[in-house]
Amino acid sequence: MTGMTSVPWPRAWHDALYAGHGFYRSPAGPGGHFATSTQGIPGGGALFARAVATLADEHRFDTVVDLGCGRGELLGHLRPLLPHVRLLGVDVVPRPADLPEDVDWVQSPGGAELPDDLVGLPGGTLLLAHEWLDVVPCEIGEVDDHGLVRRVLVEPSSGEERLGDPLPGEDLQWCARHWPLEQAVPGDRVEVGRARDEAWERALKIVGRGIAVAVDYGHRRVERPRHGTLTGYRSGHQVRPVPDGSCDLTAHVAMDSLDHDDLLDQRKALHRLGVRAGTPAHALARRDPSAYLVQLAESSAAAALTAPGGLGDFLWAFRYLT
Ligand SMILES: C[S@@+](CC[C@H](N)C(=O)[O-])C[C@H]1O[C@@H](n2cnc3c(N)ncnc32)[C@H](O)[C@@H]1O
Image 1 (spheres, rainbow, N blue to C red):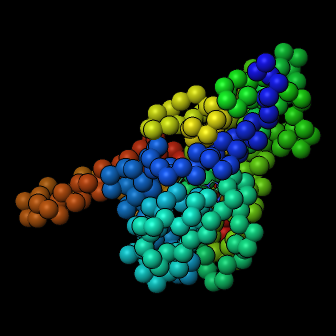
Image 2 (cartoon, rainbow, N blue to C red):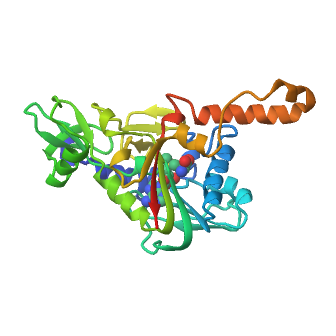
């Protein structure tokens, strides 16, 4: 009877993460289940925050918005670095009790939806969306035995999939532009980025003037994954993507289909903002052992944030808004 209750992936995915008892509303927060550049890597969050603060300082921004900020970990690191800048966290839960008290907070509906009244912030704004778009549910298509691209449906409690109707025209148009399927064979998948592109458009409206940066794991047109990247995470482990609210559900982002002016990997982006790995000079170890240890720890955090095959391959999409 599995097929009878199957629904398109975006609906199951949205409910599993953002409905009343959705995964992201649970007390543990993202940090309870996985590490990112902003939390969970020793020294990583502080160093990442320094890079974000450098960008905000370079442009003398008045406000930094962290969209999809988890429990505000990055904002906590930013507070002492940007004492005169308004910091605003946006996520689906109420304001965490341990957030520094002068950090503002807006609760959001979740997924592709954003708070209605958060638009056109005054002054110069840096908006960062770090690992937000990969958890914005997207349509998933699969090529059937006749070469037709059909919607993948899923039964929420088991994760069992079956193929539904052909992908709607707007999704096929998105594929024609961003994810060509001429060479696709039965079983190949497409993770349609249209919902992410539209969510990003909504996020850009938050900024009156400034820079919006989406940072995520993803791909460009020349390297689209043929077999899909949808997966689950729970308590530090990768798990089968079952949309029952018990795990995170994430798929890589087609970063080059987002409205952007610049697209860099994290290694280059962080280098530009002064983050570099490298062993500190040995002379420092003799002269000032504790300074040496601090630099060594920073250097290993920098290595983790810029690692090839790891966080260094994340993509940063910049949109400059005037
Ligand atoms: C993968 S976690 C990343 C958290 C944090 N940025 C980090 O780097 O550790 C994604 C976060 O985005 C949040 N999120 C998803 N949709 C959102 C929305 N529409 N508005 C605000 N936050 C959202 C989730 O609740 C979750 O905390």
